[in-house]
Length: 479
Ligand code: NAP
Ligand code: MG
Image (tube, rainbow, N blue to C red; front, top):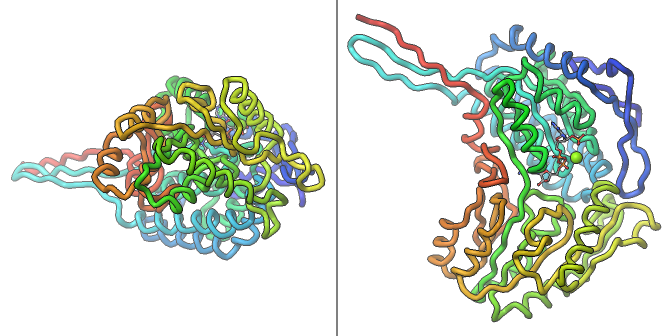
């Protein structure tokens, strides 16, 4: 692949200091291509281009025009879905099935969903004999969007689409490990006809993200990433009182009751932890199982996990690809060691899968720990890999108490045929999303985001629109 450039003011350009970095295929450890590395000067150029766009033709676009552009971009994503899926798979190690059949189509849907809101977002009026009082919903301005490596295009779509639908201009900083689809999105935004500077992409490292957070002319930061970096973003954004929304980490509980449909629950538990190699913010990484069925569930999980095929994520037979990077693999393996040292037992897996793909790639065996207690590091800290902790519980109250005993609150799953029990738990679990007899399902119309240290603000749904508009009150005297 040819080296890739930054996208600023509607053009692909070199970084000011002509630095670049390699992006790696985690299945082969080979370089895919090099990408320009932004620094403060490039971020400043991108912010200036975005600001200029807000004063240009974009400001004259009404909702109907924005709607047409967003819809067109959604169509273009669908038309280029094979190429986008391949880029995503090469960059992240996720299977071609997941990128091509689930995630790229979902990104396209999100653009189409927010296309519709472009023409349906408005303020309110109240009037009296002596005054007309109304509110206007205005774009916030320049939105800095910072995304992680696990769902590169999808996470970008969740934020870029509502930002553009509401008339903002965007500077996107994708994760250093996975810049490819963001740059392809830039190309498609040109084809769709967005005016120059409305959408910009600055590839690079954390310092480029930091420059965006610190920039005095950025009005809002929408961040998805780790809780650790989220905390820094919030602190730094205070200097300029930027609007901030944070979608952060999780350690989400799944709860299986003895009265559940066990076949579905097992499937839900497995995809809950092993989808995208466990590199999922909402991964159901703590599995609570009612004590009377604990052994049956554990053996069912082990039996199904033994059938997972690891390999090149482009192969149809591959169920699980490599982790995104050497760093992530090392991190996951160190948590597995911590689990063992802390007294948990490996039910299956527990090693680097060193013989897969000719010995190349960052493959880790899907791993299940039993004999876990909720206080252990592997039950409290986000591992972000294919590692499941299975923990017994005695009754609904115990399950609830253990599920909530976490600093995170992103998602939860409940498996039972007893609707009252399910709904009582759903009301009391402190998490932004609760799935009942399902897991890991998303709808562009359903908000997603965290409680507690999983962050605040919501992506998706009507809820996200609030976060990309300012409300202005106008009072017109009629007396
Ligand atoms: P990360 O290290 O926090 O990085 C996220 C993004 O922030 C990257 O683009 C990163 O750039 C950038 N960044 C790093 N330091 C920065 C700084 N000081 N200021 C501004 N930006 C900075 O997270 P990650 O490792 O990419 O992704 C994994 C994490 O994301 C997990 O914790 C996961 O739970 C979370 N996540 C949450 C959600 C959700 O919706 N709640 C969704 C997906 C992922 P570099 O890539 O150059 O470091
Ligand atoms: Mg990172």
